[in-house]
Length: 195
Image (tube, rainbow, N blue to C red):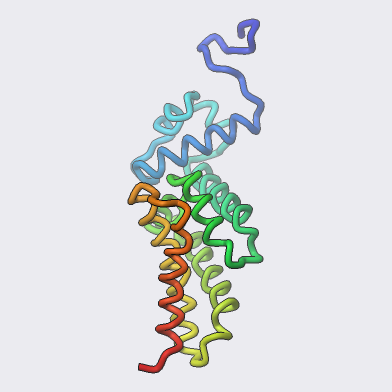
């Protein structure tokens, strides 16, 4: 170690919590780029600028690391949206969180769903979204079957709309939430009108 707190390899020694966060951020990028199976711990270590041994001081396995990445993103989204008390500002909050952590958002809602080991986590998030939508819009839709349809569709469309917004380069941030709400209003209208 040198007198400035750097190690002989030139990396700065971080407090444990800061190092863990650095690893989680790097792992998010690496896993989002290549997926769970194709990403090695060496890939994550390289992305984080640490050794594989440092990874093992924080995470017992690649699976534990991936699980921690997913939990970190879920916790960030919950904090941003004020979960479980969602309201009309939740879409704005989801957009902001996605803009701050696009790799994490995509990883949680696209990539993890394709990984058999982590599918249950994504399914639980989707079930929670259905429950929230049913609580918020169900009473406004007279037919229970169409209320259920809308409650399944609304969270799915919201998440896909945000990912599409990220993929399009995050156009017009000031109107993005209003545009997504217009689409959701169309779902509500379709569920309540009689053709």
